[in-house]
Length: 241
Image 1 (tube, rainbow, N blue to C red):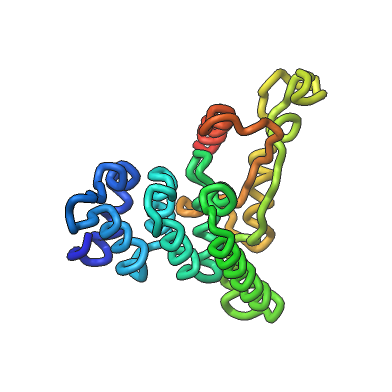
Image 2: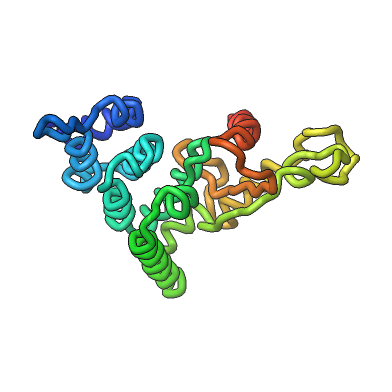
């Protein structure tokens, strides 16, 4: 990781089980070398400038899998990664963090995993500042904003699941609609989501590399890990194919 070039480093991060690697490499109390700390410090600080947005997301995810409390410096590493990412790149990082198909989302990272109010405050302030810069580009109709709008409308779409994405079949308490069978996806709803995300100035076809800005809301309580969410995650993954 330390000696490879930027391309090789990003390839390694994207093709190894980084969370498992963080777990297996230990900081040994009886030895001077702190192997896990040195590795994460290398990725989250020393070589961070050469990491792609996807690689940064993977490093954040690996630290969430490891649990931030496993290392006293973990929250500082998270803050450094996020504060070193700006404007459209930061929007992409947040979107990719929420699009991994598990419950390790940006909300969990900021409001559950991070315990320091100071660090959380620093990160939220950074997000606000970068959003203000993006909004300024849009209001001034800069070249950067026009180029961005050619790819997407840059909006976050919030949707319910029952009686919105798929029919509840009138099954209480999920919903009341009996027009279709239970769990039947409404005709045209996926195309509707896609058009909302692409916007009027976006491309006709969905780019393979693009990550959608669709967020599903659920009233189901979070129980343990992703026990209550994994069924929906599997459904969303199937619909995406």
